[in-house]
Length: 239
Image 1: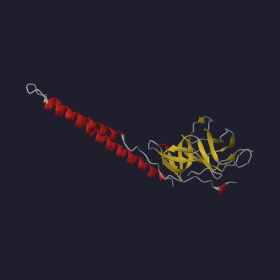
Image 2: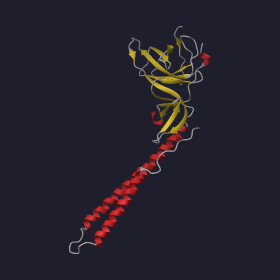
Image 3: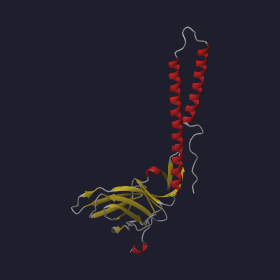
Image 4: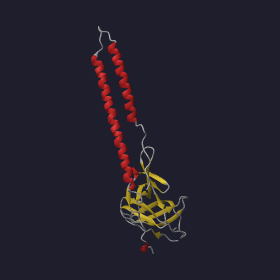
């Protein structure tokens, strides 16, 4: 079958508990308090039993007390930073919930086909004269070859899941895209592909990082490069 055009469109999960019951800063604070108490007991014992003819150097233990105070302040600061980081991660989950049902882009070259439709994304550093898109299934078999948009910048290619070679409908799943672009002199233009998927849920891992569930995979919230309303094929223009 001859190459066909690929229509383009320019287009609640509860979070898991995060953190330990005892933070690093809290543990350090407890250890420091224990050390200070031990130091004060030792100091008191020394003062009570010091030789009157050779008293302890007050400057020395005053400096030691000042050092303990400085360390304690640092521990308190670290504790406050841990609280801020925890609050920031929780805020990330709250923000990420708004991504459920949205289409996102991350680094990669995959697209999730669901309900007989999938979207792919690629970026051209400049306008091209010709763009050929090849889509393969998880077994590496080519299931579509066709023309793609040649505009400079981001291009969204939406595939209806129909195999351009056999004419059969391909099953839902993860597919990969390859883009070959050339200019008017037939010189190749390097296209940057992106992984595209629709967010199905939000959760956090053991480290407290926010994760987005996309198909059978999970991606970090911080790895999202773009988010939008899911791309849809314009059936009225499909010959």
